[in-house]
Image (tube, rainbow, N blue to C red):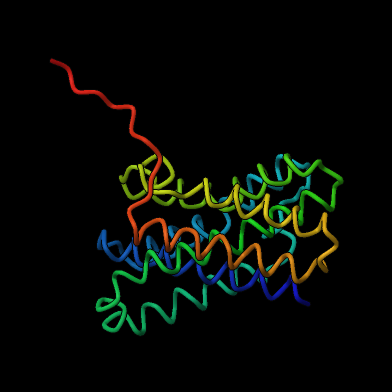
Length: 203
């Protein structure tokens, strides 16, 4: 039940971030749904394909589709309120990567992958939906900009396995990992912490 709740919350968070981007691009209702859907399930689809978990999760359990549809419906109904909360895109995206990183790690553990591979799987789960969202909306994906994104997923994953190693209960470590990822990204953006840019202007 705990992991199901995390999955639903992650789906809602990423679906809302997709809705906000689609609304910014002035897409129609169908376009908004597609962007929300791709954002919410893109990372999980890649994860399931990589570990051979087919048909992928959203094809076997309609809960994800219903969750996304309801999220989009509510977003369309309350579109005038969402217009005043454009900055919430960053917040929902941040919550989404925290939740989905740990979901990916848990899926990796279920098929007995090593901790490093689990962290890689979690990072892809958290990042790929946003990459697809940005590409479809003609934006440079956030993960490829200077803004810290995948790095905090990796750090949160290592923190989770460190806590498990010192015998912190799994659900507690799981929750701390999610909170750490969210907090680290918020702090990184707040204090403008980023990876170095290797671009050099020509002379």
